[in-house]
Length: 170
Ligand code: OFO
Image 1 (cartoon, rainbow, N blue to C red):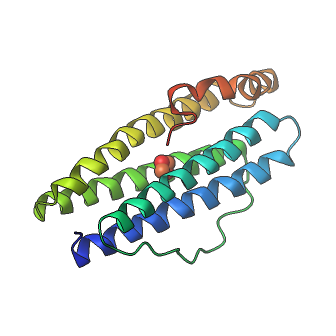
Image 2 (cartoon, rainbow, N blue to C red):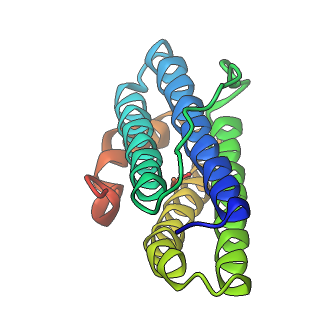
Image 3 (cartoon, rainbow, N blue to C red):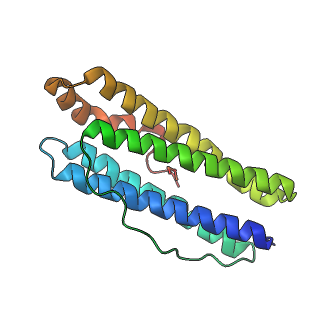
């Protein structure tokens, strides 16, 4: 059985995962209307779907453990970006926020001696290692490419192959 405080903290994480899904959907849509970024758009459509899976996994766990998973209200995310680089920086910052939030949850689970939730959260701990790593690699690539158009062409062409271990997980 979840404590009230753990239930509330997990529901906050549900909201953060939903907000991530929303933010990446907005990134996908923005990329789709930019010339030559079709694969980057696909990448963020998939990323958005993956975040929804993270949200659902949490919701099912909350309900299974005797709590009540709340469908959150969401604000409109950032919908336009001044550059692709700027958008990827936002992506990394967002993942860091999510990782910190997962760490807080793990900390709470330990303080409450809630080992079932602690065990459940390990999947998210591992997931965040991968997500941050992917976001960092993509940011580093864009840093190298700079304004080089052929580099950007290759970045778009190859981005789906960087999803690797992350894709389809849930
Ligand atoms: Fe839910 O993993 Fe990214 O945010």
